[in-house]
Image (tube, rainbow, N blue to C red; front, top):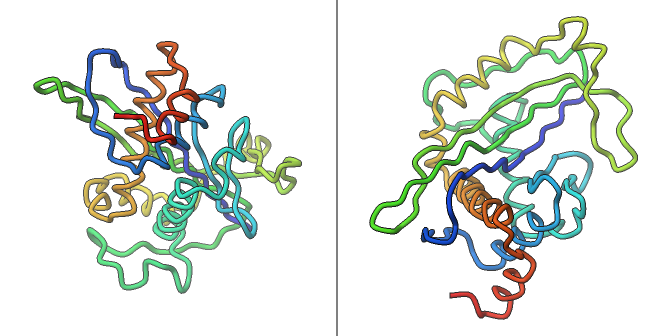
Length: 227
């Protein structure tokens, strides 16, 4: 039996990027990488999956950020959050102080994955400075086919879902503990960084929707011309 997981920076902002100011919380090299990926990808999303030896990155041109610091951060966050859900033996989270009872494991009877989505970013301006007033972490579990796509991505097992597949109760409880205490887990520097990546992705998605050239912006950042 196999379990897989995927992180997605899902971004919605609903802002006017021309008159708001946002303080970027990620390093310039990651900002440039996000610009190129979001500017190229049709859905303006960024995602990884801890699958295989090197893991997978998603998008129309995944080589844009494969091997980048951004992808590495997502992979490590994927591992941490996955350990919270699956509670495997010798997990990274052994000895971790959880906000309540520690996660418990379960017998996995079919191949499944858990998908972590950072999204619902909403912004407000205070004295001209743009800041996030709302965000979320969504956890979704589903059965997957044993046969992956040629690129290694896993496909949902629709037959199992039609038959009423449900994840183990233990995993549901672990996921609820995670989503009910998002602010607690954001105290971890790694998780805080992923939320910062998500905020930035939201801003860049808004810029893309307004017609801005994100590849040109990446060029400016990489040459040190961004202010």
